[in-house]
Amino acid sequence: MSKQSNLKVLLNGIIKENPVLVLILGTCPTLAVTSLAVNGLGMGLAATAVLLGSNIVISLLRKVIPDKVRIPSYIVIIAGFVTIVGFLVQAYAPSIYEALGLFLPLIVVNCIILGRAEMFANKNGVLASACDAIGMGLGFTLALLCMGSIREILGSGTWFGMRIIPESVQTMSIMTLAPGGFFVFGCLIALVNFFLMRKGKKPKQEAGCSGCPMAGKCAEAAEGGCK
Amino acid sequence: MEFAKNMMIILLTAILAENFILTKFLGICPFLGVSKKLDSAVGMSAAVIFVMVIATAVTFPIYVFLLDPFELEYLETLVFILVIAALVQLVEMVLKKFMPALHRALGVYLPLITTNCAVLGVTMLDIDNWDPSISFGVSFGNALLYSVGAGLGFMLAMVLFAGVRSRLDSEKTPKCFQGMPITLIAAAIVSVAFMGFGGVVDGLFK
Image (cartoon, rainbow over all chains, first blue to last red; front, side):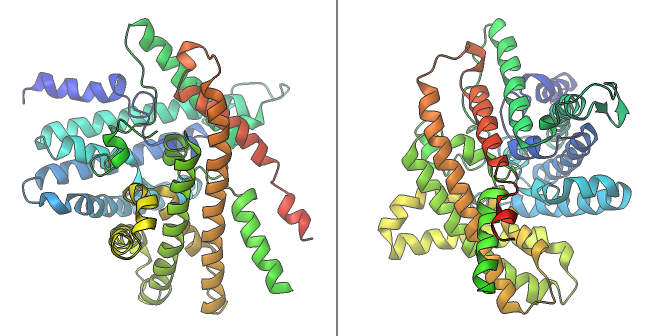
């Protein structure tokens, strides 16, 4: 593959096929860890690291892994990288490790990672897969950072711990709680849809079935998506 | 009496105060994907309860008797996801062979559950809640009960939300809010309702 197309693959993940806001994948961590911008950034980077590692290894092994057991093999590779990244985060950023809690090991079942393995890494070369991983990972990080920033500024009046809104102003603390997560996510997708429609494209209406690694096995997906 | 009280606290906490979907954000994908019709919402959540309980029943002893004594805690993620993936396949085969009626009802949802973060999440939370000073029988019972509660909470949220969504479909929403955005905003409002359960469990059993 030429350099140009690798760059295109990389940019594709960040903007045009942003995994969170356009493809609507990986919703659980997006909602759960973004009460502070720094947690969103940490989660995004951790997932990017796992995605990069798993995409490279799966792309290297794509001719070795038998088709029938590919999903379990992918899961093992991903779980290995998740464990490594978990150790790294615990050692170098213990406060983020505490804040992410359960959601750090749960990167294993993040559909973005398994989805990219199934849709991209097992069909493409190593370099292209690495570019795809970086693009998708940065897209995920960017979306999480964006959500985290909005929720932290509105909910606690700070951004990365710096005070943005003066303390005399009452902040909307509900933004840092569960309902705020759903609300901000809904509004962000609506905003993306608004821009997509202005460019004359049809926005995605439903939860991502095409990105779901189980789509091949899922009877509902064959009938036109989860209904 | 004390025993029954403890059971009620675990169950009600898992169902209401710490609802998996609406306060813990576990299992959002099926929540948004399969909650459109009431019957599929019920089918999906029944399958989730089923797999959650079986997964806990298998992973909890593995952790207590294998991983913990040999100091292999760091393999938790790897072992649990593999066990769950294998288990779901096994359950599907057993159901197909011996209980075809149940397989017809739950079968389509089972493959989706392998990579469902609610199932992996509940097994890991059970380990987090594990207190080695309590006898294995009691802590195993508590873990199973917590899984049942988590599954029932999942079902409650799915069923409630299926009702909300059937109303949403007939409403006129701005074009860019149609579909996913308005669903998420409705979920925000349902989740506000669940915040109200925050102190209920503590208050009931004071």
